[in-house]
Structure formats: C-alpha cells, structure tokens
Length: 101
Image 1 (cartoon, rainbow, N blue to C red):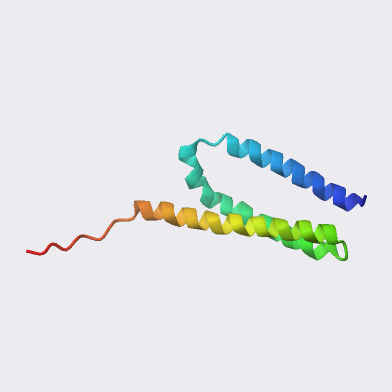
Image 2 (tube, one colour; image 1 turned 90 degrees about the vertical axis):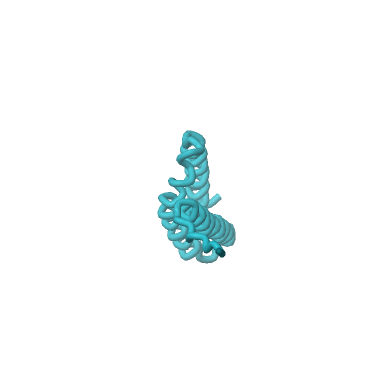
C-alpha cells in the first residue's frame, strides 16, 4: 500500500473522530448559530479536497477519495448557508400588514 494513501486514511479517520466528538458536545440551542462559523471550516475542507485531487496524479483511489470529499464539503457549505439564511430570516422584521377599512 502506498504510504501517501495510508496518510490520507489516517487524516480521514482522525478528522472524522474529532468531528464526531466536537459535534456531540454542542447543545442543540447553539448548533444553528455555529453553522455559519462552520462554513469557513468547510471552505478550508474544499481547498484541501481540491489539493488532494490535484496531487493524486494517476492514483485513482486518491482521485476518488478527493472527489468524494469535495462533494461532501460542498454539500456542507451549501447546507450551512441555507440553514444560516433560514435562521436569519427568523429574526428579520415582517412587513406591516395593510388593513382594509
């Protein structure tokens, strides 16, 4: 097995365990406000996935892993922005109703 592939697997395993541990400790009332901050982290993940795709060269396994991670990171970024937009809409003022007299 290629040593680069093993390193990528270790990073994936440790990142997954760390993410699971961190998300499990966040109370539900704080989860939505933290989503907007998590979008920045997901942006870094997109850059890392693009770097993995570029560095993969002819290694198909690394190319597939990089592509899958890019897909998940983009899904997370888009979902985070949608949740943040919905959260901000809850706090916006509603327009005054026109009453017919």
